[in-house]
Amino acid sequence: MFAEADGVPGLIVDRYADWLVCQLSTAGVEPWRDAIVAALEALVRPRGIYERSEGPSRRKEGLESRRALLAGDAPPAEIEIECDGVRQWVDVTSGQKTGAYLDQRLNRTRVARYAAGARVLDAFSYTGGFALAALVAGAADAMLIESSQEALSAAGRAAERNGLAERCEFRAANVFEELRRLRDDGRRFGLVVLDPPKFVHSAEQIQAGSRGYKDVNLLALQLVEPGGILATFSCSGHVDAALFQKIVAGAALDAGRDVQILERLAQPPDHPVALAFPEAEYLKGLILRVL
Image 1 (cartoon, helix red, strand yellow):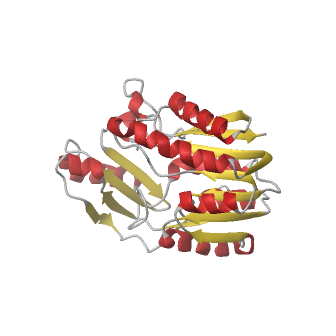
Image 2 (tube, rainbow, N blue to C red; image 1 turned 90 degrees about the vertical axis):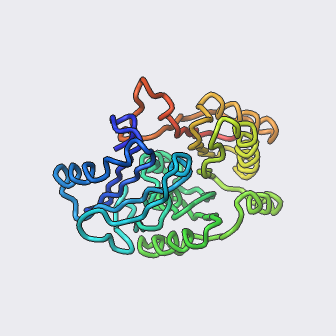
Image 3 (cartoon, rainbow, N blue to C red; image 1 turned 45 degrees about the vertical axis):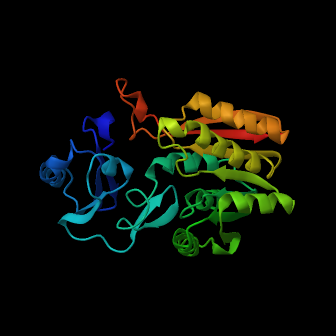
């Protein structure tokens, strides 16, 4: 369930195997928690329902963060799921968002189509979704860069369980700093993926956040081998698709690279956008050929 787009503002519900994870982010939906749980039990009959109501949106509305079992059995430390041939293990009690970034699952498959034979750089890798999909699709190897050692350790476990660990290199580091080191070392990759966290949380942050997007895309463009691919994303709702393309174009100009747009990417069909609520269109991406 995707909040306003599905008629229940402030409510996100994701499913991982037999468990549901709910996020109630507004004061309007907060009093309806019990009714929502009862409806989900009746409609889905999950093994358990867990709540992950956290983040700045709740703080803005004067609500405390909540992590709690709402119904049924508590989820295990890791829930196994499969996305297009890649086995993943999700920690719904302490992972990012509701445990994983399900909104990128189709985009991982589309990006992986360009991975055959390539050396892959997965920046802001989290638990390695893009890198693992690329390796399954035939990438030669993958370097994963992530600031969270906990997330990177989870990526290592997933790589091992999928039989891909021998083709992976894991670097726990500040992504901007590590990309500069790789550039200065003369490293090049056939496929670079940028899936950073939200740089813009409000309209007041658009200018500063845009600089962050430009800087990281400039670094990435300098790391793509001629004829290689850059897949770059923004999940900031305040940065629309036109502005994001303009930012990346500015980075390409500064990098001195000619770039072609091969595909435009967005959020999946289970994250629809209501015509009356265009703000729900938050995820955008570009698959680029770098000449």
